[in-house]
Amino acid sequence: MMKARVVYATITGNNEDVADIIVEALEDLNVVVTEEEISQANVQDLNDTDIVVIVPYTYDEGALPEEGIDYYDDLADITLNGKVFGVAGSGDVFYGDDYGVAVDRFDSRLADSGATRGAQKIKINLSPDADDIKQLDEFANELVSAAQQSIK
Image (cartoon, rainbow, N blue to C red; front, side, top):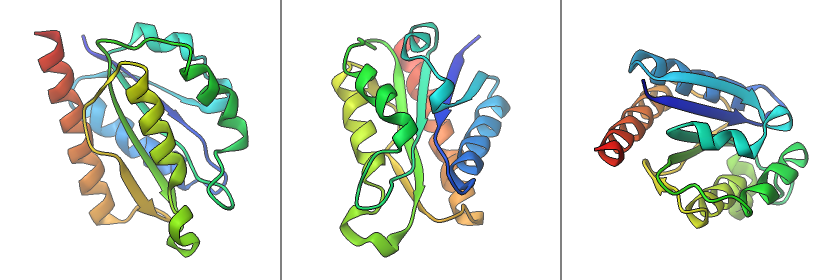
């Protein structure tokens, strides 16, 4: 059975909501999912999964989540060849050019690790609405399709 790990960071609860939507969509596709808050997560656990999803928030002027900095740094030291990844996160368009920067940074870091991008990154303004939920469901579908292709 295919396995996924969804790691999130949240202050307001919006990113936990995003992560929960992705988890539910993956489970609906018969994927076994582990969901965990980023400060409790260990990068080495990604070796035991097929699909990696990171759901970070962007703090202040484009900063990574404080509780996710070690995780982000540890991603630089792991090779994730054969893994499929996706990054989605909530932010606030009020911050202009700094909107969702953590999503971009985690996306690049996972690509640098050798993992395959299974879906385009998603940035959600504040809390997910009905349109965002549809987009996150499609995101999960794309990740599973990509993982199925890499297994063949």
